[in-house]
Length: 153
Image 1 (cartoon, rainbow, N blue to C red):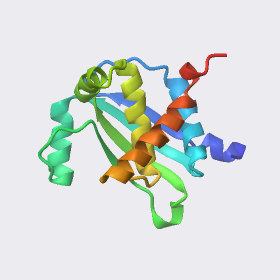
Image 2 (image 1 turned 180 degrees about the vertical axis):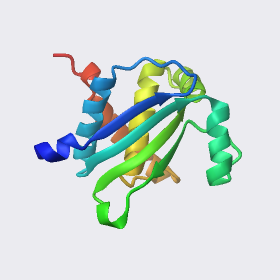
Image 3 (image 1 turned 120 degrees about the horizontal axis):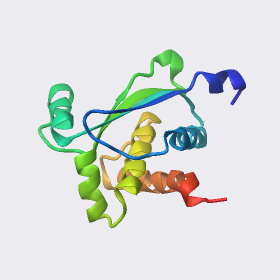
């Protein structure tokens, strides 16, 4: 990636009345690595951490789904920028906490998995059927293996 491309990367994190603990600089660098693994430039990725109700309202309003979920992504790429990631993810921290117990991991580990899951959706990966879910999980694991907390120096 050229220096000019690196300077236009905008990764933002927002919280809607939900506290979360991440090293934002570390996560930004990690997400840029993950996007390069996918062969795409990361221009803009906004992550919003919220609660179940907020995400349910979005799910109902924009997707006509009346169910709880851990993440919803919105892809804002245009045909002119199809090789560039530009989107946002809304993540329910209530689901993160519950899934961390279910998957026997820390909420931080689960949050990182879901953050990169959203990025992978924006890279074009789906997770509707069993094969897509298996591939998505493998890609998540590959990305998580690149996170600095997994590779202390």
